[in-house]
Amino acid sequence: MAVAILWLAACVAPEPGGTPVPQQNEAPAPGSVVAPKPVVTPEQVVAPKPVVTPKPVVTPEQEVAPEQEVTRADFLAQCEIEAPTSEFCAEPGEPTLPAEARLAVETRPIGARVSLDGQFVGETPVAGLALATGTYAVHLALDGYREITRSVSLMPGGEETVFESLVPLTGTLSVRAKPAWETLRLNDRPYVVAQGKPILLPAGVYEVRASRPRHLARARIEVGAGDTADHTLRWRLVEPDPAEFERLAAATVEIGASAYEHQNPPRRKWFPSFWISRNEVTVGAYARCVRDGACTEPPTEDGCNWRVDGREEHPINCVSGEDARAYAAWLASHDELPYRLPTTDEFERATSRGNDRARACNTCDRHCVWRYRDVDADDGFGQTAPVGSLAGCRDGANVMDLVGNVAELCWSPATQRFEVRGGSFGEHAAFLDPAFPRPVEPTRRDPTQGFRLVMPEFEP
Image (cartoon, rainbow, N blue to C red; front, side, top):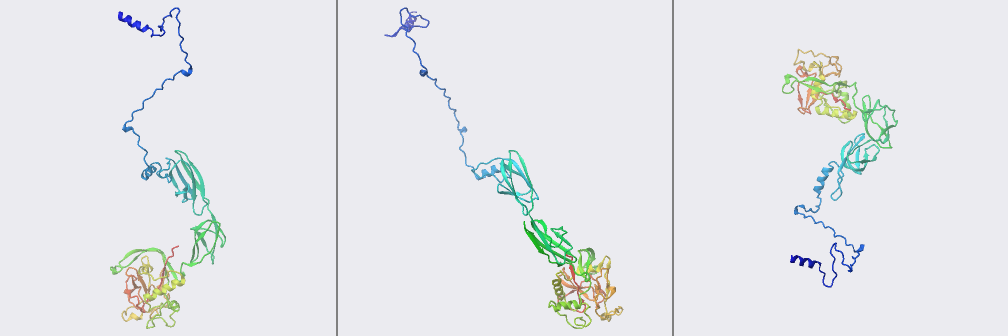
C-alpha cells in the first residue's frame, strides 16, 4: 500500500521549478493559472509518412532474358507461319504484319502478268494469295492488251477478288494473193474478205493460210498496235496434176506373201493416203531432166529406149536406182512438191484393191518366148509398150502398168536397198507377183527396169 502511494505521488509531482500538470478531469486549483494550449497552424501540420510497399523478391527463374537478335532462319520460319504464300514478308529488322487477308486476281483472257506494288506474283488466275492487311496497287499486263493498274484494300480476315476484262490493242492487216484465194483463215479462223481490204485485229502474231485448187499459201504476220501490216501471199503447189497422179485413200491392206515368209511375210498394214503417178516415167519426161543437167543419160545398147525414134512415150528403161532418185529430186525441185520413189510396201498397196490385184499386161514378150513357149506374148509390142496404151492394164484406180511393161524400182526401208517389183515384158510369171522381193544394186541398169513416182499427202 505504501509503495502504491509513493508511485502515485511521483506521477503527479511537478518537475522541479515547473508548473504542476493537472490531471484529466481534475479541476484547476483555485487561484492557479492555467497555461493555454499552443495553436498549430496548417503549415505546421506534419503529413503522415507514406506507406512503402516492399519490393517483391525475384527468383532466378523469374528473371527476364535480354531480347535476342532475330536470325534469318527465325525470320523465314515466322514468315512461313504468318504468310506462307506472300511475297511481302519483311526482311530481318523490319516490322512484320500477320497475313490477315487473302487476294485473288482473275482476267479475261487469262495469262495476264500480275504485280503487287511493283512486285511480280504470277499470271492469272491467281488464287488464295495470303497478304498483310493494307492497300496494294494491282498491275495487270498481257501482250496485245491495254495495261491496267488499280488499288485494292485488304481488311483483317477479308477475301478480295480482282476481276478485269482486258481491252485489246488493235491494228490492221491487209492480205493479197494472185490469183485470188478461195478460202482465207487467220489463226485457223475463217475470214470472208476482199483482197487488200484492211482487217481490224487485236495486236499480235497471226498464222495466215489461204487456199485455192492444188495450191496453198501460208505466212506468219505480226500486227502491231496502231499499225497496218500489208502482205502479199506466195502460192505453193501442194497437189500434183490429177491428170498425171492418182490419189490413193488411206486404207489397211494385206501385203507380203507366205511364199516369201523370211523376206516379205504376209501381214496387214495401214497406209495413209498418198499420190502415185498414173504411168511409168517416160523417155520424153526423163529427157527434160537430162537437158537440165540433173540426170545422167542412159546407155543406148540393145533393148534400151533412150535415143530410139518413136519411143518418147515408152517408159524410160536402162536406168538405175540412183538415176531414178536423181530424177525424183529434180522434179521435186521443179514443181516444189515432195516427189520420191515408192517404197516396196507402197508399191504393194498400189497393186491391192481389197482382195483384187492389179492386172498384169505386156509380160513375157518375145524376149522370153524361147523359155516359155506356151505363153501368149502377142500384144503387138515385142519389148516395151507406150505407157497406158494397153487398156487391159488399167486397174480400178486408173494406175497403169503396175505389173508388166517394165519392172519398177522401189526403195526398201527395211533393208535400205533398191528393189524391183511388178515384173516386166522380159520376165516370167514368177516375177509378176508385186510381193516378190528382188534386190538390185544401186548402179544396175537393165532394159527390163524403169520407175514411177509417189508423193505423200500434203499435211496443212
